[in-house]
Amino acid sequence: MRVFGAFGRLDAVKVVVTGGAGFIGANLCRELSMAEGFEVVAVDDLSTGCEANLEGVAATTLVEGSILDHDLMSEVLDGADSIVHLAARPSVPRSITDPMASHHVNATGTIAMLEAARAAGVPHVVVASSSSVYGANPVLPKSEDMVPRPVSPYAASKLAAEAYAAAYGHSFGVGTLALRLFNVFGPRQPAGHAYAAVIPAFVSAALEGRPLPLHGDGKQTRDFTYVGSVTAVIAAAVSRGLTSTVPVNLAFGTRRSLLDVIEAIEVVLGDVVDIEHHPGRAGDVRHSQADETLLRSSFPGIEPIDFHSGLSATVDWFRSSAR
View (cartoon, rainbow, N blue to C red):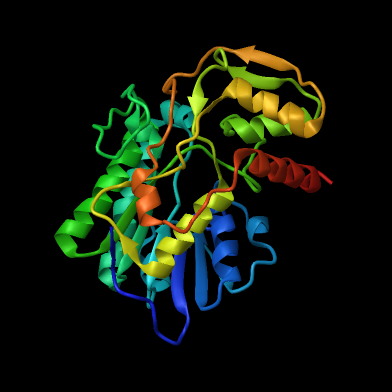
């Protein structure tokens, strides 16, 4: 990990957030906008994000369009100091339904963004990768020096994205940092579709009095990370211009089963929920847990928001958004 130039100038630091109207992107724009000295531009085609996610966010401009639009990206990146590349076609099941679409957005979209960054002379790029790249590797916790073994097209597309980030760093001197995100959850995460992530799907169902849709036996484990912890790390990376020649896990080494999550939701709600059992899903890994060593050494001042506090905040947001 190294610092790729300090952003110490007096005028505002321009940060472009691709996928900026999405779940993580909108939370990040809020995080950056609360800090002084940032001009934030969110780029989003609104295919999964929505304009309402950015309501009330100061110092942020939303540009509607695709990262694959070269002319648009050239214009948006003019004068940018840093890019946070969150735009993606999410979901393992969605990638199994349409692998080419996931590749087009996640892999081709990433190299298109990096090429636009190179042409514009942007010195710093943060690329969101995924813990799914570890795939069938059974060793826990997952450390960055493990050989990736993706088991879904989504995972393969994310591995390609982080590989392109490393290649542009080596070949063209673009300062890059690939962060492997693990099962992020929190406010503004969409729930009402077939490919919803597990926590918003559970919380939404519980608040609406529906059975929680559980795929598999529920004993599969994940390293759930509250979105506020994720945005704090990314904001720190942008502020310090941090880069790395290797990907960095962005999770804090916790592991809980889906049955544990259901129990925690019952505690927050003060009520017992019903469960609707479904078969396990193709492409899902059995267990996931991050080795946090490199993350902790790179961001020593950041402490994660604990799971139960994050879950309570998530439930509160779902309640308020339903009114």
